[in-house]
Length: 453
Ligand code: ADP
Ligand code: MG
Image (tube, rainbow, N blue to C red; front, side, top):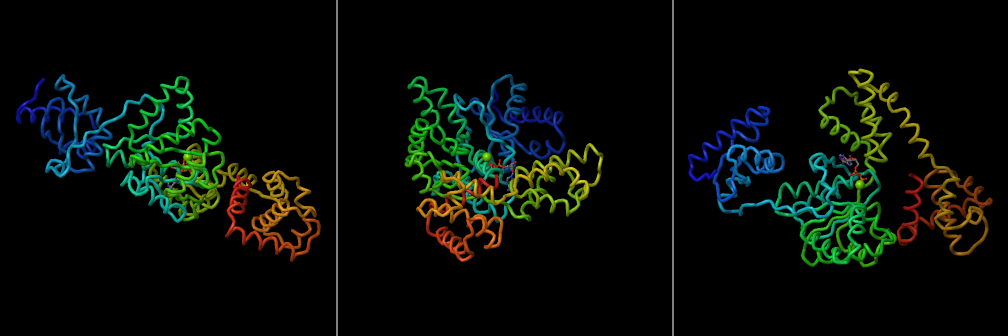
């Protein structure tokens, strides 16, 4: 069917809207469809005038396929809807046509639409990272062409990285965004590397994108060939002023087994961290998750939220897990109100395990230090004064004091009866080195990480 006249536009609009109003909830219809108009039909495109930029984005994101189908049903032609606002029509902006790249590669990878900036709770632990991510999302390929987000597992890196992608897709739909984890990349690379020409195709495929979001870059550790290939793409993106964002479980400087040239590029970009949240942020996260799931916050006693926040602040993933378990427990017990007793009952096993896991002892510290430095425990606690051993000994003493807060005398007795001034000296030495020496800082961070996992 050809639609040429204004009255035909109006007829078509009315017939489509009448079907949509029957097929959808009234609130959905009122919010998104009622005030749309057909602005123009040009070739195979139907320009649909939307009330606001937000409705344009929502229509495009959520109802594109649906509308295409409805138009087809009414016209028996494959018209493509193009959503525009009054502002677009004033000629300030050219029509934005959404182009997508055929997914020859990374077919099974997609952006999780549930991770957005709107539902990312900001606190002191992540505000810098959130700002940097949001900035990047509003200006991809801008001054921070490389964004590097690092931090321990479960603290929101993937959420932020994905939020960048969702935001760009919504606000800058002409930009092509690809998200994948380094493991996905490795898989694609391996699958297509058999013939060299295919490697070129993968390169060409990736070049079509404007923004690459690469999760968990540490997984490329020791994969020399893949890294080489990856480096070429990275360079290409840099030269073409495109955006690449990474996440990693550690600082660029602490990544082992990654090509020095890649590391240098990382360090010249913007690096931001996510750290463990404070109790208040955890409580806010819980509140956000509860509200988002459609539950009533008043069902939960305030002290339940603080209790959970306190017990699970090591990882937001486990905090979420605890909430899911609590809700499940409440529902099978038909509890309409959630108080602290119910909460401790529900989470008993989780709390016990996490407490047991996190219990650090002197012996665990000595074991960790000895394996980090490839020494034996007796070497560390003994009298030998060679450089490497002395260094490991200082670090072990420092960690025991820092993590367990044992009296100096007690620590001395663990190290062959050294007196407390010697112990004090070791601690001060490491304290100083932490400010000036990268190796020491890396060692202490890594050991703390190992001890806490
Ligand atoms: P990581 O990639 O650092 O291991 P994720 O991004 O997968 O962590 O986060 C783990 C879970 O915690 C996800 O479900 C995520 O939505 C949630 N989460 C993390 N940080 C926040 C936050 N600041 N606000 C809301 N949810 C968060
Ligand atoms: Mg992750």
